[in-house]
Each structure stands twice: as structure tokens, then as C-alpha cells.
Length: 214
Image (cartoon, rainbow, N blue to C red; front, top):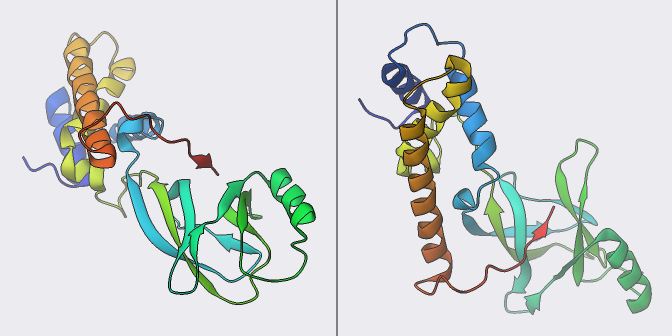
């Protein structure tokens, strides 16, 4: 059986459990796994993009979980835009006299009325600027309207055995739990090592940088 879509994953989980009466709860097993994955370094995939800075408050990319760097890199200016807390930004604004509009030198993380992450810039942009942003993508959950994501497409064993592990509390005393858990832990460890190699190269002893968390 193929294992590249949400629909196929649910069918495979039912086959592995040898149960045809779990249609309504199998999505819960997948959701519980995804909650665990969002707390795991293994799914912290970095992405580089551009962002337009044209107001005091600017929305972050919709798939942004954590921001690592914000910077200018064009023919006019180059260098980092400092990331700091809102209180530190307010202090820096006063110390540096950032009371008039100009190009942004620093940014802080805040949230809009809907709770969505955004950047608070100082000074307030006096025109539209394009900046580079390096950030960690959030894991997009699977659903009927989102049939796949990069973890399912590239590492279906993580999704399958992780979902099986999270079925155990519901099914109670499943003797296969230890095997499923061992397989999941091995897959996550291998994925974790792969992410480190992709991010830091062969020298995985390099300490991961601290990220500003929104």
C-alpha cells in the first residue's frame, strides 16, 4: 500500500492494527503524534525567504515557528536587523532616538489581535524594504484538506509508527507497543541526525544557535 497521503496513512494504520472499527479515532492518533513532533528537533526544518518591511507591525510567514535571523542583503544596505524583546526594543528606541521613520534597525516579536505572530519594527519603516529571513517552519498538520507534508512524504515510517504508538492507550495492553515505540524512536533519532547534517554539515558537534522564539 502507498503511504504518501493522509487518506493512505489512515488506511495503513487500520491495516496494521487489524481493526476496521477505528475510523473515527485514527485521526486522533495522528493528531497526538503531530503534537509530539512539534516539540521535537527532528522536524525543525530551516527555510530562507524574503519579507517586506513596510509598516511598524509586519506579519511573519504563515508557516513560521521560530525566527533565526532577519537581515538586509541588497545593493543599498547589508547586515542583520537585531532581534530583541519588546521591552528591550522600547529601551533601544529611546536610547537611539528612533522616533522618526527610517529603515528598521531592530525588531521584536508581538502578536496581533488574533494571536498571530508579527514583528514590531524600530524605527518605523519610511518606505517599503525587502529583508531576508531565516526561520524554522512549523509542521503543517495532515487533514482532509491537507493530504501531505514533508515529513509524511520523506519519512512515512515516522507517521505510521508514531500513530501506532499513540493508539496504544486507546486499545490498552497492545503487546506490539514496545516494537512500535522502538521503531519510532530509531526513526526520530535518524531524522534528527539527518536534520543536523543538513543544517550544520558533517561537523554535528557544532552547537545549535539560539533562536528568537515568537
